[in-house]
Image (cartoon, rainbow, N blue to C red; front, top):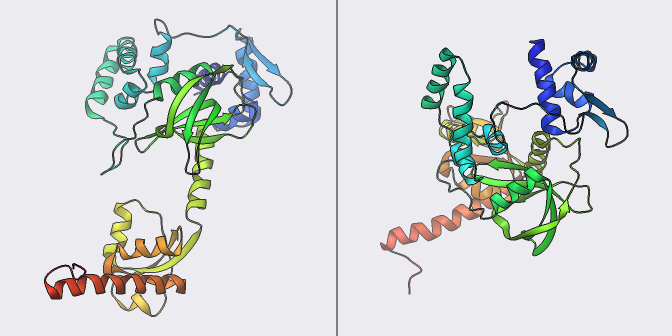
Length: 334
């Protein structure tokens, strides 16, 4: 266990260039004192670990020193973590490298472990795109990925929901979310990191040289925090709703987030199996459309404005469709 942790420290320092002792302790789920003892042991073993002070400081390996996986090329090392995701590897231009890296790793294993690796490859396939959705088209994905690997600035013409404009970006990482590629990047000269959807990059040009990557930037933590902020901002309102067993199952099947509440008298509670839940909604209108998607399997408790809008929309639907059924066609047709 300890030997594995020492190797993990070495790999983290090599892959991230510079990390604080606190960041290492958090990544490996141990105390800061344990990390300091481990660093002393690595130094005693001849590993050149340097400590730098200041805001941009931290622990790092001596410049120019690194370990190597024997026979592994640079592209194969990049592709190694994508070896189980042939689709994304191919999109990044690393499809052949991912296959080559996997073959080299498997060839280096003892025979029993080679057989186990072959079974995993034959029996596990990962498809990152959700049902009934198409993956994004990101024509500049490979150029952005290359800039991420090299810490190179890029100039992009980006179409946000507000406007289309040219920006010079420093891309810090890539994220694949439900079939769509995103870049975590900051504009040149600024400290704030923002998320850019690569399908919205209309043009891409080389920027002004390279940039210094922030040593404290953690892509996984950034994505978790930005995702939580986005979801809270996207759906800032809450609605209390009675849900039938069918509606509850529908929420579970679509992996929608909801909070089940204690049962209250009245409303849907008079019907067997109905439960009150708390739903996050973007607005009263968006919430009404969402509730109507359950047909007669949901009833709004509050807010009152949502109950009124659901009733109003349902009345218009009944007027349009009920009269059409009665007349045997479209009642609005001339």
